[in-house]
Length: 81
Image 1 (cartoon, rainbow, N blue to C red):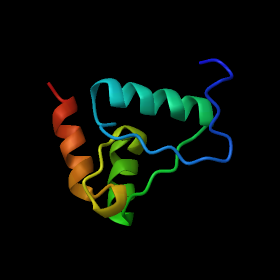
Image 2 (cartoon, rainbow, N blue to C red; image 1 turned 90 degrees about the horizontal axis):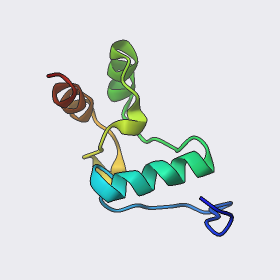
Image 3 (cartoon, rainbow, N blue to C red; image 1 turned 135 degrees about the horizontal axis):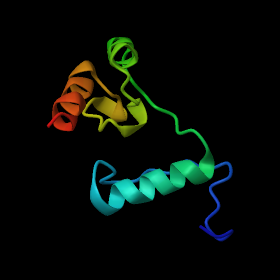
């Protein structure tokens, strides 16, 4: 990305960030801005840590974009062949 895409001091909300173009835009914005803020329940964080899951790549189903334990389990199920 060039310098015209500046998010310094801003919050970016990307709709449809779970897949496709929305996901590509969200990941590009995260790379540009540094580490994204991830909202997750304590149970989801513990499960993700135990299983080595990066929460930045887990689509959230909870209120306000919060990742829940079931989201982590669903992400694991979709990754396995």
